[in-house]
Image (cartoon, rainbow, N blue to C red; front, side, top):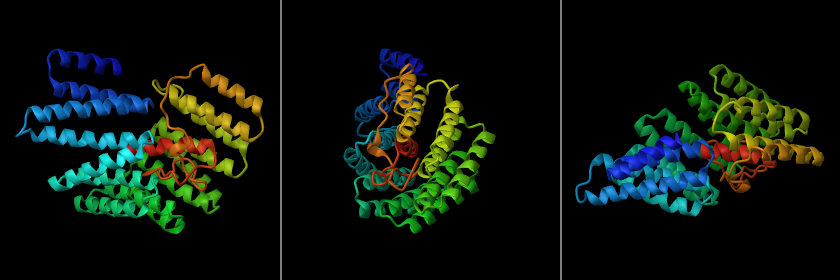
Length: 352
């Protein structure tokens, strides 16, 4: 895909068609994000924004409505991309401007998405009062649009915010609302994300058996849907709960199952690498340093350059893999490296 987008960009450059070039650059950014190359993806998103700005300037003072819409969408993606690599202050600046532009133009869907991502960044920066305003605005826009998916995302934002504030009961209620909406929509990915959020709060409350049952159901649903990546996430989430329960051997078994789910998928070398590192982390926690070293060496053979954020955007001591699927909070730091990596992955997924 990257080769195809590069070729398309060359063609558009020769024809001096900046719209087509921006389209090719955007496609490359999406492919790089999928492959876990988040810094590279952000670089391409910034380039796409530059190209579209030049298109708008060239057609001023009466630019096409479609060009303005594309530019606005890319601004939102840039904000999410900045969040995905931990550059939250910059993300807030981009997203605040983008959200206001959308609201002034009456673009409610764009405003809804911008407010949701802005909420994530503000939560990460401990600016919870501002984050609450954004989450409420996100929900308001979703309700005005009668957008169930938007309502689910807003519920996730509110849950993450309450989790940050350590209001576990309110967080659980919000995440359960999110889960209910995704069940209504039949959205398998959303269900996986929401159930992980619910599980995180249950885990914080010490209700481990409920967490295990929930993740077992997630694994079954992902398998039935043929969704290998969601199945991988569910196995990793279950492993985090088992680590909290002190069942390290069982946790390693779940992480190995997760590896098998995605080892046949092209372009996921960075995810496989992360899986080996998660297994090594658990081995180290068990005191098996030699085995952990061997696992890391095993991963090194297929190691690829990746800009995956480390624990900088991880989850809280009480919240494992994937906390807040709708918004991963820095305050919810994971107590295990496995939880941190899985949580960061969920955070980036919801940023999209």
